[in-house]
Image (cartoon, rainbow over all chains, first blue to last red; front, side, top):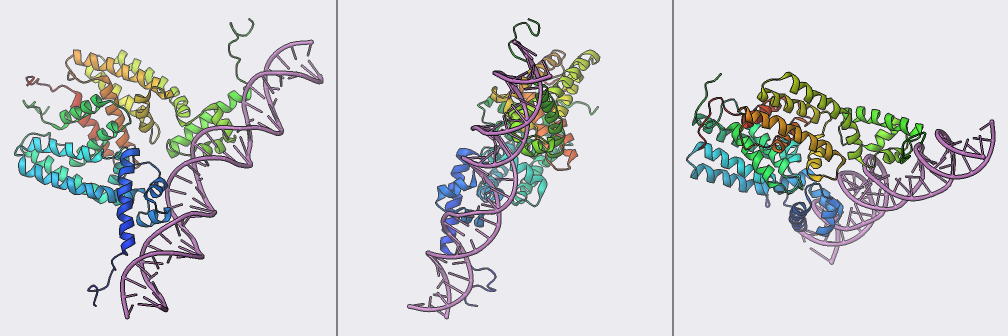
Length: 201
Length: 201
DNA sequence: CGAAGATACGGAGATGCTCTCCGCTTTGTC
DNA sequence: GACAAAGCGGAGAGCATCTCCGTATCTTCG
């Protein structure tokens, strides 16, 4: 009883901790440079560890990605709180949140793909993170709808997928920023309620 | 001069023609069943030909995909003409065209990905096909805009990418049809002009 | 028809990626 | 300092793409 209360799980060895952190560090740079589909063995090599070490810490690409995104997810949560605190206009708040989400989903090239898989898979390590953001989106959306700034009938899940979809388009290796802007505008026009309300039918 | 005018290129050998057609046939079924990322070697095996034969006819996945889609593209062109002929309302015509495009882009699982690449790559065999459909989209869109049924400022290219994006979401192996419908509705709300026009600012 | 030449075929194998397995090394503990 | 336990490395199995070239098959022409 001298170590931990129930001795459930011992703290990992220091070299293991160091390796894990280092791999994460290298992976972040590698994904940023070569996209999320780049070779994991290459990352191990670049980190100076054996492939086995990498795969022991992160059994597959999604697990590695999840560890990487979890750090960024904290920033996103902070951003959420900032928007909640600063932005009085519910519609604008939703718009800003969707922007932040979009930025998060384009952190690495090709990221939207595994994220979309995660939304529907629930077994993926990324699934939980995504689920949380869907909920947050729903909160912002509901507030905007109650304030009359967003169309009724739209769901948070749909907006989340919409953001993923536009990020997916932007994420191509193409240098076409106007399309990104256009699609974002298109989507906003899609969820925002027109200024002068039209009769329901 | 008995065969062709300039005898530039001889007609391929009959076995080659037969193989090509057979591979195409098998590939279509295989892609439909297992998605566009399924193994090409598996297709060769299923077609009863060597890998070399497949790769000689279609140097890479995109080439094979292109040959497959070209056939379907003809149907799409026919659909375009049918819409032009039958539908008097320009807005409805655009909506129908986008629907048809969406159906074409979901012919196989995972198809939107290579299509998106093609839109921006121009060297891809698929690029030409896509380019034509962007142009067609632009025509329908312009007509709808002139008829006051679509917002100004939207471009055909953006709508095409939008269709690809929603197809991409739908194409996940998930059984979530409501999201597909929701995203389509979202996009339509994005390009369609509200019934009662709001002042420009 | 039959031979010569062009064309196409098959599949072994080079290369690259993911992921596993297990003998050896390092670390923490007494 | 010694002894588990935990962790490490990298060879290699399995699977995919794509190439290369000896061999088989078509086409043509005398």
